[in-house]
Amino acid sequence: MEPLDRRSFIVTAGAAGAALAAGSPVSGAAQSNGAVFISTWQWGIPANARGAEILGAGGSLMDAVEKGINAIEDDPNVETVGYGGLPNAQGEVELDAGIMNGTTHRAGSVCNLHKIKNPISVARLIMEKTRHTTMAGEGALQFALSMGFEPMQLLTPKSLEAWLKWKNDPNHKTFWIDKDHHDTIGMLGTDGKGHVVAGCSTSGLAWKIPGRVADSPLVGCGYYADDSAGAASATGNGDVMTNYCTSAFIVGRMAEGAHPQDACDQAMRFMAKTAPDVTGGEYCVIALSPAGETGAASMNAAQPLQYAVWRGGRATPLQTAPAYRR
Ligand code: ASP
Image (cartoon, rainbow, N blue to C red; front, side, top):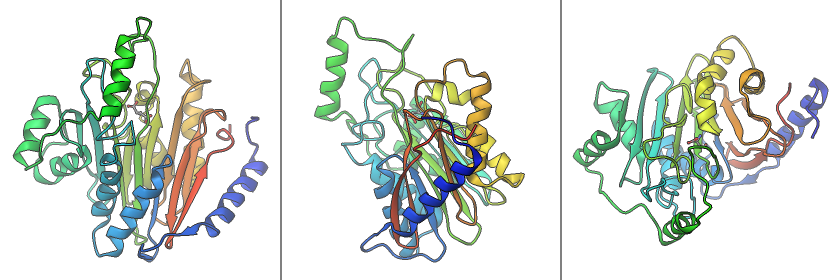
């Protein structure tokens, strides 16, 4: 698909706005005044719905984003997040997550967490109960256990079968050289009163080299939030995107006055200038202003980002049909 010029972008943005107005009402979800959620991929819809429900019931925005992401971590059918996420090359599920409070400018994150299905909740506790920001591996597991999390087997019969199939294929590709199979739940929320929260959770790349950490749990890469500017999250090839601090880049542009859509497009342009290998593959971002304006972009038209917006009790699935505005 051809890159968009400014006029066709505006038409597309208008069409997205129309879709938003026509979005389906979410039964049971409270119509939290002015609140907006935007989340990555098709599971963004249930994540946003859960977040809206929590906020509508009197929970904080932080509760809403955490619980929204928990809903996807708990779902065994999402093979790139939490329980049922595809494992590393040794057959162990390693989870990464991070969350950031735009008011306090504090983040918490966890990398390479084993045996705990809700890494976003562990990340939140690191932020709220310790003076640290990021914890990894065995220490993070011990911290989670000390906070009362129950260890469990994160492989499902389906993910175990997928790993065995990969392992027993004599020609299987490895991540010393290859990339495949990945996604996240990235979720951004505003309460409509100027407060934003960003969160991100993933099992990372399937069959990754054990110990690999990419953008999702790193502050400013997979997620970033600042009440004075907005929030952003990234999904896609995190080995590349980490090098661009994508989410902090987007929020930085918003701090200078850019609309979230412009800020997302600028991030893609910035990456396209120097990343060697971005003409194929997945490189996607979402953004939200404190006032509830949204943006989303994908580097490649052939690999659009599906995402979901919740606003005023209505859920709208959207897709970045055209590539970013060059
Ligand atoms: N960025 C994640 C990672 O590389 C995966 C994804 O969002 O697709 O671990």
